[in-house]
Length: 78
Image (spheres, rainbow, N blue to C red):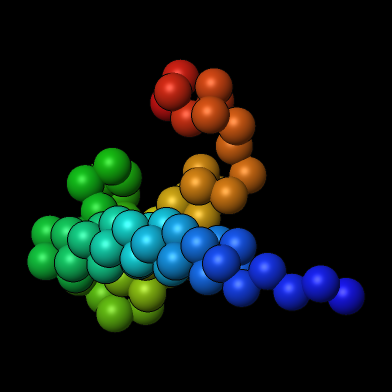
């Protein structure tokens, strides 16, 4: 098997940068939920720790789905 270290290095660098951007987005969303609660759903009491945890999990799932499962065209339409 032929090894191409420059290809694997470039792939890993791009992958790390992409994941870092998603991580920043997730952290930003978590901070908003912890500080302000969820304003998209007025019936949720976001002052409860269990509610905040559920809201954070939901936010992470939305971000992950959007970034890994949608096509570029679908992302643009959001």
